[in-house]
Image 1: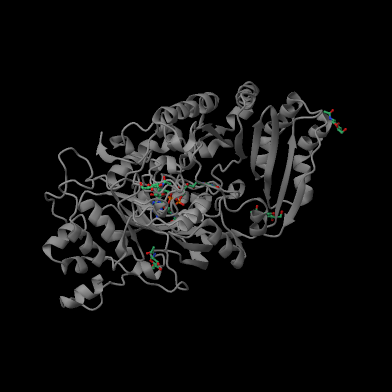
Image 2: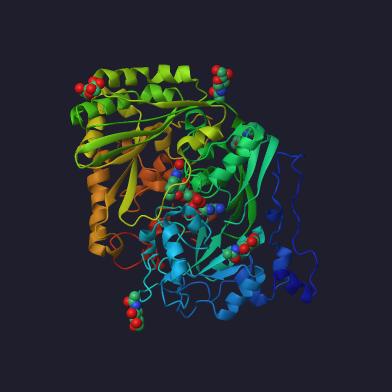
Length: 637
Ligand SMILES: Cc1cc2nc3c(=O)[nH]c(=O)nc-3n(C[C@H](O)[C@H](O)[C@H](O)COP(=O)(O)OP(=O)(O)OC[C@H]3O[C@@H](n4cnc5c(N)ncnc54)[C@H](O)[C@@H]3O)c2cc1C
Ligand SMILES: *[C@@H]1O[C@H](CO)[C@@H](O)[C@H](O)[C@H]1NC(C)=O
Ligand SMILES: *[C@@H]1O[C@H](CO)[C@@H](O)[C@H](O)[C@H]1NC(C)=O
Ligand SMILES: *[C@@H]1O[C@H](CO)[C@@H](O)[C@H](O)[C@H]1NC(C)=O
Ligand SMILES: *[C@@H]1O[C@H](CO)[C@@H](O)[C@H](O)[C@H]1NC(C)=O
Ligand SMILES: *[C@@H]1O[C@H](CO)[C@@H](O)[C@H](O)[C@H]1NC(C)=O
């Protein structure tokens, strides 16, 4: 039974939700952005007032909730299953009624691979194992995450009928939200009952931020609306096309809509990443960065449920400090975003170029490195020409391969692109390195995007990644350039591979938001990884060894040539969860303001995420796993 029926039974008004704001998309006003229909279904003071006193204590807003025995354990921990004050089954049932049956007790995605859940099914298990590297398999599940290492590897997708499959870092329950009211009720319940709260959109997060043992999870995946607003008038002064994008919409869905409406959107390169959740919250780097900066820079307004349970708008004129923090200050920290309104940019042509070259045969390592160095020398002209790239350099048993996939040039012609890269290609020719680029012109973003990007594989157990953002200043000073290139070259010579981008989002739309200062200076973004010995069976000692290699041997030399004092840093959404000095490294000069806003908007610590702003006050007691997982009780430090 749902809340509607309960209220009917009690003789409460038939109209459950007050439709506080509801505008046709045609008559937009600056003061009130339009709402999706699921956003008009709100929990109101009247609804709360119609509940029993006991229900009000559990499900009411912060200003109405009465502190009780439910609120705090003496140890300042969130309650955990088995604790005396863990909500009773009756309470969970009551909550389920209020959210119209949307509460889902967690069953791990791979449970059919084990006997212990009484769900064993060899065929199903084979299916689950096979799809465990496909992001969509995890997205469709209420609690699954794409990186089992941070889950604690407690229920891997292997056929092991007699093995163990436990919840590990998976939350205890998820709410399959389909209205703002569902989000508000979940948030109020978590806060009032002192439950750990997590938000899961797609589960892409690399650091375990959408996981949490013993938590209640807000699962936003089914909020799929997307609306084109032809002439949006924002309170920041922007006037033009925009999209309103619901919390569960993916990057590919945004690109499809943009193609349909003849505009360009700034989104990421992996199609299955959520647009309005962790991506925008973390800044969101994009192939459009050379023209429009970070994805968050295009965001004009967000609808948000804040820690007190209230539903508000964050924009230039409405809660501007929260608006500032939500654009770059990290996911799952300040509120639950239910939708964003982002600028749509003009349609334009794109040039993509893919090519590879490698060492071996008559190409020595020295010659290969010279070819790569010339690319590095040209990152200033390449980024000044608004281009972006995605490349890999593989080192396998003594040979190197450079893969450009692709060089991405918005608003270029083939001629202007060839002109731009000529010095590099001429140099490769001079070095005797053969390259045969596939260069194509596309008349809009979508076909250009599809050349080399799409769905990425996930689920890796044998490696942990980290990254570094190298500032342009290191390119402007010849001595610093030598040092920087030297560190990158040395990385490859040590037998390691890397992935990277040239990109310079700068602050091209001239906005003021929480995007890390490192992104305003970056010219080269590199991804490195450490191998986990023993992979799925890695012991905590082996895991710790991999973490140390990542932190010290892989990222250490990169950190030395991109110090925070020169605006170096690391991208918080794809980072090493054990990064030292993460506050400065992930958030740059914005950290202290972000921390004070965290205290203002979430004074009770409803939201927590590993390496999220303010997380230094908490710890996940996961025992010794060698790296930080979310498999344990969350407590104040
Ligand atoms: C294969 C792959 C490719 C990637 N490519 C790119 C890329 O090209 N560019 C780029 O910038 N990043 C990229 N990323 C990183 C990506 O941006 C982050 O993983 C991001 O956190 C994903 O957000 P999500 O909402 O999809 O994921 P989730 O794991 O569901 O959530 C991530 C974080 O955001 C929070 N969150 C989610 N929804 C909301 C919400 N509605 N309100 C408040 N908080 C919320 C969660 O609590 C969590 O802290 C990639 C990641 C992977 C794994
Ligand atoms: C699992 O255990 C059962 C009963 O103990 C045994 O018969 C079976 O062979 C075991 N299966 C595997 C795959 O080990
Ligand atoms: C979640 O809710 C949607 C309706 O919003 C429904 O279509 C879907 O089946 C539900 N999913 C699960 C796993 O319960
Ligand atoms: C945006 O907000 C700032 C700060 O409140 C204000 O100074 C500025 O005028 C606003 N922009 C517009 C175009 O209204
Ligand atoms: C793209 O190029 C055209 C023609 O050179 C120019 O008029 C336009 O302003 C450019 N667009 C952007 C977004 O730079
Ligand atoms: C390698 O051999 C090819 C083909 O014979 C030649 O074109 C190229 O110049 C040679 N490169 C070097 C570095 O000698």
